[in-house]
Image 1 (cartoon, rainbow, N blue to C red):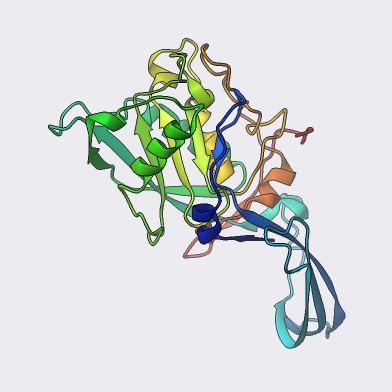
Image 2: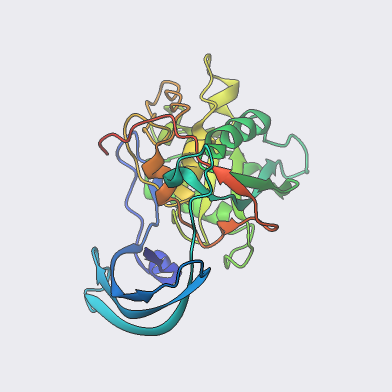
Length: 301
């Protein structure tokens, strides 16, 4: 499990994105390891049982250094019994489908014309296909617009000024992170300070794994590249759902400025499916059974 801290995101400065494959910033999260120790009394045929025991939470990467562990005693916690139903889907792949709301944001000029988002349909289809393998369904909202010529092309992506410009654009929609959707901002281009195009592999995520995560992607990954990098957005959504870079699957970094980014593999691993987490990633209502269909073995990060 993990804890995300929006105030820490604001208080801790963003370092410049010096590496070509760097596409995440403002990720102030603590990872917690949980050990469960207790007893369960089950009667055959019983669908709900009671659990008594202890939960020991250990902080693996403390931000403040003030909390190292938490011990919680629990009593009479009801647990649902899940029995093998003879399904053709292996038990370790059976799950309930989850949904995540995504809000596209297109950038128009100061006169409300010439909207970005030419890459939207390609990015949307690829993201849907990739994460369906993990039984995740996206609820894409109708695009909203920001009218500012200055935000159509993001410059200096490898410097603090470029990250500050991204943050300013992000604040144009849901500044306080109150919406129950993840905003994805579509800009025309992302450039480095020396003019190189395709900075950060044409995609970047802020505060991955947290409710206030935001994503920025560049139309140039589709419009200027042959073959295109259709899974850039799927990769960034992986960061939104708490994943880090990992070679071999969709989370393989693909940045290579000034050249077009290498398209991320159309593959996810079972370990990645199990690791997905974000407070906005919720069980679908009504509940829908699903079978994960991973097609990749996890590699090194």
